[in-house]
Length: 115
Length: 113
Image (cartoon, rainbow over all chains, first blue to last red):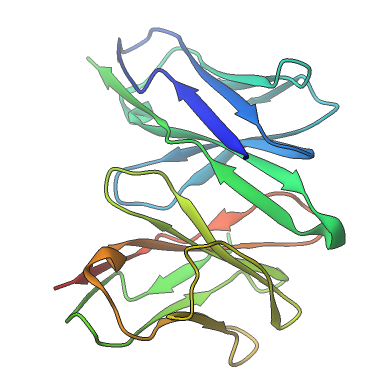
């Protein structure tokens, strides 16, 4: 069964500090891994997408890594801001025939940045 | 910048009533999706739609659910006879080929009383 596990479940950090969120998955056959930011009551917004051959992808202060061998990904947030407070969701897609994506969501890590 | 839109933002209905949730995907996108998120839980896949037919659906998407693309712009999710446990945020998403990136709408909060 395809699964995506995220840790920690929640995290509180001081403004300006860095943090790293973890994602482990058992999705096969792997197609791509995405990190989303979801503000409370809003739709997820894509931060990064990585395919099998990509190890690192950056988007501003967000840097995602992917180790396809160990099936692990991390999202590193640098110099956190109050607006970074949100849930961060790891989403892994399995490749299906016909190009359709079977998508498995993690439960998310709830990040709170405090002044 | 184009974005996925959803209406209404909040729908309140009585148990047993039919509801239709509406989505307008981004215009050049060809793949469409519905997801739901029960309060405090993770986002769950419901159904994907391509070329005017369902391409994949989850075990949640039973006979009470249906999707339709009635014209060139709207993509709807119908729940025939709502149950209390259908209360959730429902997100529509779309993606253009050949990109892997799905763009999500803001969601419709469905409350079944």
